[in-house]
Length: 138
Length: 392
Ligand SMILES: Cc1ncc(COP(=O)(O)O)c(C=O)c1O
Ligand code: FES
Image 1: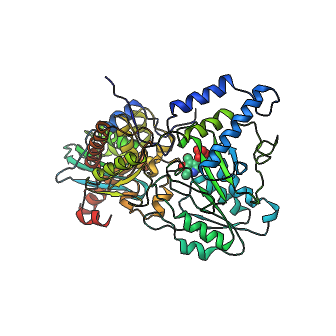
Image 2: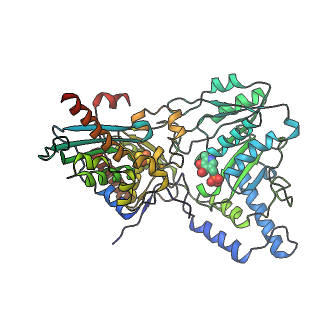
Image 3: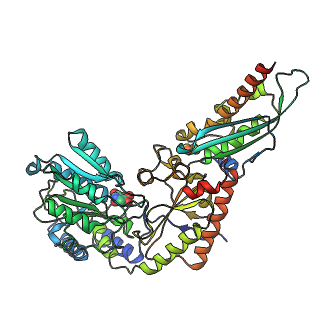
């Protein structure tokens, strides 16, 4: 079958229509924005961290919120990424791959692969920025 | 009870009209003869085709011999431009002028010729989408073969000053082709009065079937066929005639079209949508097809909006990069300089001219658009900044 642009799975449509963890956060510990409005997609992630008594360099993601301008795939992958990241330590969360996000959503149309990498990329970028900041301070 | 879908994508294609459908099936099931056959079934198909040709010719004030049936406007546009280019009598003329906002069937044909050594000029348009006729006039040289400018644009509905363009072309003695797909049956054309050499139109935009169209070629135009075979259409377009399609297309010209009511609904929808903060109208306020609405919304993406409306049974279209096969933004919205924060947030509504929306449907559409835009605004990281909105 010739792939259709908007042939989204039920799961993608669910996360698109009922996005989880969507919105703004007051005083986030980390923030990252990726994407470009001229391509149609921009994603902003905000994270709140909680100290991990076992490992100071590896706090837990206590809360995470996203805001996305983009297609259904972009919104659904943003939502799924926050679901996967919430409660994980940042080291675990850093390893969330776009493939894992896509798999959790069933499947994504091939043409949408580029924009659906955005959320996992944003998460990685946010965590790496934080790690750089911490390393500088200590 | 599930309510009926509200189809608002008539620039993409239209629903076939009931009377047209009756004629269509009649010529598929009963009078199905091949017009080239010598028996009476063939003869009656031939007669009906010629009647349809006369009706279409009369509709644009052409002669019946100047109408040729094709598989649709894509073919008509290809034939117009390529047919002129390959005619041996035109071999000296290697320059073509078109605009930045043409349909791909014109632009891609030009690009193909460009590879073969033709020089193509793409005339710019202003923010309303109207071509710069002075630039056009200045670009015409002794080498210019044809000027191809559409009558009305399929995305933003902007109507071009074709009388003025035709005047320039005839003064400079170059061929003028116009893609009239979107304007056909909505705007009156008189090919004699306006001095048009070539005109393309399509059946499925006027409540007739897909896969049928025609091209008007003014007598004496040096044009060669691009499809060869059994010499149908006086050798201009070989291939067994699509009799049912031809007859259906001619029948569609007889439908009563309610332009005034279509315009009223267009204006009401535009007025209501423009009340949404961060909205802008794309295209011209005045020089606009009766059935076209194209707006952009700040900081949201069009495919998402289209999908949310689709879930409510409202079918619209968008020029967003995300919804295109190539993930590139609309060349039309780009040509009219839609600002970055708006270019992927476009929403196109195109109305049917034979079955206007009811007041209840209009209000439902307005309500749902407002609701869905608000929803996507909440999800978007871009919050309205009044200053930015003014610039849009
Ligand atoms: C302006 C314009 N030109 C040409 C075409 C192509 O017509 P068809 O679908 O009959 O090939 C269309 C329709 O998509 C159109 O809107
Ligand atoms: S955001 Fe543009 S294709 Fe997904």
